[in-house]
Length: 126
Image 1 (cartoon, rainbow, N blue to C red):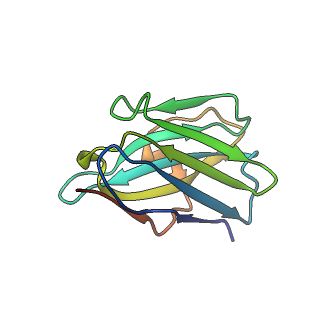
Image 2: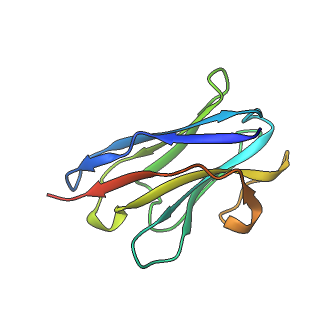
């Protein structure tokens, strides 16, 4: 069974940092791209970052560019999202997901992803 499990969310003050983890099982993260998405209350889910199966290609939404960094540890079969300079508008449930097809460049369209995790809550507030 192809699964991902997110962790690392929490409550942080504006300007703070968090690192989210996306642990994969049943497949290798160097075979499938991984995307990070988020959904705030009353808003649609948005793609915020992705990393390709090769690890050589990453993409970021404009809202997080320069503040968030996606990375991967193949040995741990885990993808990370380092989030710095957090803002209240970053508050959302964060999800990771596996790209539907092997060995593809990444993108931020949720329609290309499957095996969604249960999400982890990130709250940025003073």
